[in-house]
Length: 323
Image 1 (tube, helix red, strand yellow):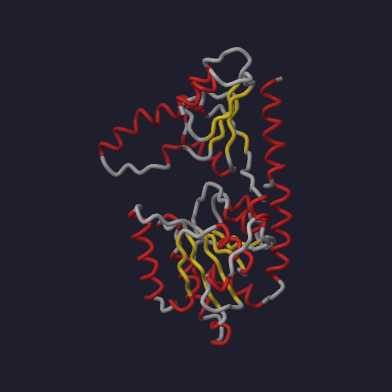
Image 2 (cartoon, one colour):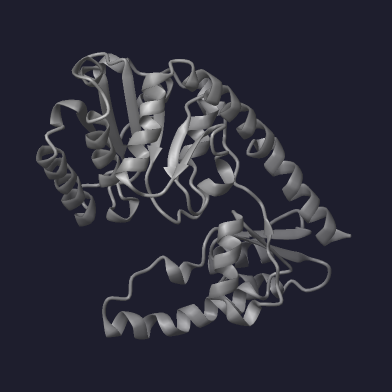
C-alpha cells in the first residue's frame, strides 16, 4: 500500500483531486504529502485490529504499534466512510481518540452484470435428486460463520413436517474452501460429523469452492438462503440472494439488520435452530412466499445497493471534498 501510494503521488497522471483508500489506512500519511487541495477519502470496511487473533504474547506485542498506527492514520483522512451502521458503531468503540469523527455510511454495491452474463450450471449436477424444498447456505468453511446452525435448523425442521414433506427437503452447504487452510479442512469434517450425528446426511450436500455458474444455479433453485453468522460486518451474500429473488433467513445482528427487511425480504431470527426452522417451515407451507419476498428483495437491492446508488453517493462525497 505504501508503494502504491508513492506511485499514485509521484507518477500517476493526470493529477488526482482525491485519493480513495480502501481498508488499509497506513498509506494515508504518504498521500497527505501531496498537500494543497488534494484530499484523502478512506473507506473502512472494519477495523483491521479486530480481524486478527492475539493468541500469544508475541502476537499481542507485535500488534501494539500496528493498532496505534491504524488509529492515528485513519484519523488523518479528510473523509471516512464505513460499510454499515453496525461498522460505524464498532468504529466509534474501537477508535476512542476519533470520537469527534462521525463516519458516513456507504453501503457496498452488488455487481449485477455478472449475474446477467453467467450461465447457471445444471442443478442436477449439484443435488443428487431434484427436491421441491431446496435450502441453501453460502459462507466460508470457518467456525465463526456458525454453519452448524443451518444443520441444526434442518434437524428441527424435520420434526415440523410429515415424512412426505421431509423427503422433499434438501440443504446445500456451499462455502469457500482452501485445503491449505487448516480451519477449512477441520471445520468441513466437523460439519460432516454434525450431519451424521443429527441423522440428516441424506438431506445435506456439502459443496466446496463452488463456481459462479454453480452459485447462480443454486440461488435460482433455492427456496431461501440461510445466513448464519452473527455480527457480520455487512455481508454480500444476502444481497446476491435478494437480487436473484431468493429470500434470506439471517441472524438478527450486524449487517443483515440493514440489508434485510424482516417479514418483507426474509426473516431475521435469533441464532437458534428453533427460530430458523420456524422460518423455514413458512416457505414449505406457503408456495407463494418465495415469489412475494423474492420480488421485494430484488426491488430493495436495486433501490439501496445497486452500483448506481453506490456511485451517486460516492460522487456526492467527492464533490463535497473538492468544493
